Structure formats: C-alpha cells, structure tokens
Length: 171
Image 1 (cartoon, rainbow, N blue to C red):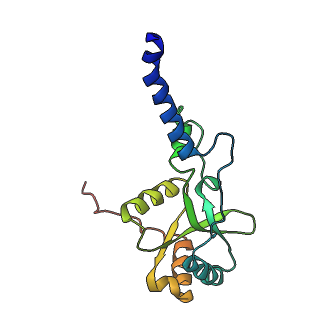
Image 2 (cartoon, rainbow, N blue to C red):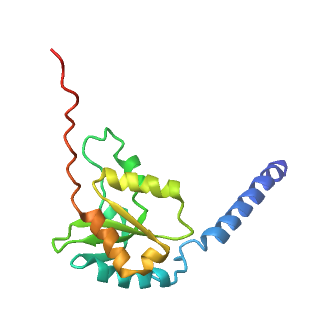
C-alpha cells in the first residue's frame, strides 16, 4: 500500500502534463486545424500592381522566402546551418527578376510595423549576398513614377569615382 501512495503524486503530475500537452498540441495523432491566409494584404496587392507597371521589363515576384535567393557560401567552417537559420524563414516583400530568373532587386514596402534597426540588419544580410534593397513607404509607394525613379536609381550602375591625385611630391 505504501508504494502505491508514493507513486500517486507522480501519476497525478503525469496526467496533468499530458492534459496540458493535449490541450496545447491537440489530440495525439490528429492533424492541426488549418485555414487559408491571404497571400498579400490589400496594401501589398495595390502596391504590387503599381510595382509591376513601374518595374517593366522586369518580372515581379511577391512574398519570396529569403532562402529562395540566398544561401551560405562554401567555407563557412561548420557555421552553415546556424547562418542559414538567420534568414531561412524571412520573407522579402517583392523581388524583381529578369527573364533568365535572376533576381535583380529586392523591394520592401515599409509601413508602421517596420523597424529601422531590423530593416538595416536585413539589408546588410541581403547586401552580403550581392542584392540591393529598395524601401518604399507612404506617398512614394502610391506613385508609379516615384516607384520607377527609385528602381531606376537602384539599378543604375555606380558612377566611377574620380581618381585621387594628391599633391605633387617635392624631390
């Protein structure tokens, strides 16, 4: 009798833990309930239409997983998975790509939910992979010509820097 009474608190504990797990995870062996989610918000859908017009002749892909266009380079000394985990679940609002399927420019539609420090970190990450990000917000995101101007500026080759000559040396 004494052994059963000593196990009783453990049994109660296990029943409570299993009950909580079942409530949180659902019944064992059942699939979680799923429901459709809008692919883009109304603001993103409206911007997408303007972006397609402004970005011609480039194609526009919305809601692109960063892992679809960024990967780790060889020689990361065992840090490959950890590095990949820093970007594999991030989503890029829009990617402009050419007819060969090469991404040319990343476009982010910034709203009040965007945070400058997080955005800068993302831009540095995609920049290390060779991409340029254009960020648009407010009225400039509602004007096709303003969008086109930002895209053109970002796609233009950088102007060559003037060669520094310095002062002539005296002998």
